[in-house]
Image (cartoon, rainbow, N blue to C red; front, side, top):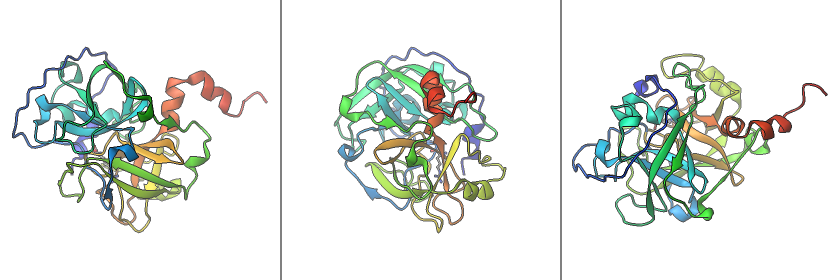
Length: 286
Ligand code: ARG
């Protein structure tokens, strides 16, 4: 199990990435966590905000360099998991990474469908905590534009889509088995938002992380089954048409009593639009 990936030192940084796609061929994907256990194949048009984070320099060309998911939240902005950019995942600090890109509009990683766009800027959440995994998000600026139709709205603080019981869909190219079988074609799984206390009990603090309801979201099926998995990290959990979570961590994949833990997207909204979300919260003065 790749517990170690969230343990690297991460710092905010800016990066000028130039695209030098050098397929290295046979490097096995040293992928973070994989996609969607208990899921089903989808076409990218059904979840066009799902993009792949890729580096052929680091991970080889066998899966187009895909190693994490990411989500289009603006025409030239995507969000992903902070831990995807950890030195332990990349094998190098991300500022040394010359060919980091997102692949959008592509179902089959090895097809020529869609676009590959270079990542121009990386902003890792300065509040990301590698011990608990709290605040596991990073915002990436792209060198080109995605179609507006690919952009998904984020659910802000107080959005009803965060309510336990809400049906949600997680999508990505990650492990479909929990045993390192990485998908070549995009997949999705249906899960439900679960009560915070379920994850708080499952993850009171251990090597995998500690559940923090303020910054994390608990989702899956109580009996196990559908779940995100290694390689899906940074990818979307969408409910009621809005982005509520980013695949972050879990103990294994799809195991009973061990739900998936997602970055709570309202925290991303707060970080990006502090004034707006402050107004949306109950005033302390009233
Ligand atoms: N940390 C994994 C990654 O880097 C994601 C794990 C998600 N696990 C889960 N059971 N939902 O890709």
